[in-house]
Length: 350
Length: 175
Image (cartoon, rainbow over all chains, first blue to last red; front, side, top):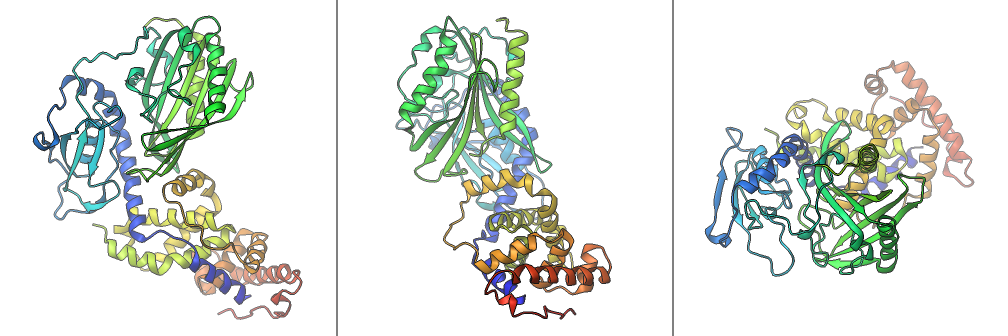
């Protein structure tokens, strides 16, 4: 009997386990996420007004250092903790998250990238990089894309008359003109074959969407996750055409390169009646980065749920958190609730 | 303040043993790896308190046991997340035939017997210590171990050419 167990022990020696420092870093990141979740939700709600109220940066990084805060918990000796990933967050969100961990924050204006569309007001880069173990009270520098004009008007032409109450959470309104499907991977609607425009686009009567932070509970721990919710109202057969054309494009194009990542779309489930609404489509979006991005996995999968009810199409696009997808239940419940609200009252009032 | 060096030392000296224990409970290396990682994540979170414990490994074992028995399903997402964010290199061959046989046999045991057997053979714990950790009497543990070994012996002996055929007096070597 003993030799069987000895053999098992030997095999355990050969198995991969992370280095202890990696485990500690991961643990710290988990705590950071949990701690940030509550404050982050609040910060996101406030972020729009906050950013709109103060002009961002116009000068190059070397001259626009902006010391935001040196606030942090008072300690006799600083603790070594992992830097949370704040790339992609707004300036105020990132500042909140970092300060909560006891770091000092220095904000710099990022220079316009050589290509691609900057995400105005979002952190493009951070130093030290996420997961790096450094003493708390150390200054973390973030570079924020700008400029963003106060009261800036979104360039898309949708009337946006769909009521905010149709959305489960309406934290930040989506500007569909901000996303260049040729370069940006952070889309709110799936674009499998850029730059092709679906014929049904011409039949859109209205389109509106919101990005929102949702809460998920895993192992009794609360984690944030982000979903983009879009509702489009079509004329004539537009809604039905959209699902057909989208499914067709996914089959036709398979994958596309954007910003150093290969984006591959695949249909997970397609239903005329069974799933949700009159018609629905569940899509998997795989982002495969050429090199591992800072603070996220090299290959990340997200789900997109597209539901048609009459002339309306609901799209719930999972953005996840730190490159990790949301729980399927969160996406489904959100779509289901939007469908319910739309069915009860699709009135186009604000 | 948490002592990172102390944690690292504890991790290095106990994680492999804990991995074999987790594998004995679950019969799946990937799951065992996840359980062990999850256990040390919890340990690091409360390391300042835990590092004062006399026997930290007992605490780690308890967490692994709990996760293995009733919480591992909730780890499904984290397994995916951890694999995506820190993919393990699959350079290690699958379990040997002997280990597969053993884990199949272990899986057929009642949870208490399986745990007691794993603690005894993999963690080298005495009957009294196992009894203490599992909250039962030493006599019960002796009985579990005897029954468990008999069941394992029978299961392993079913395999033709198994070395277990030759092992007839299965370890009456309890401390």
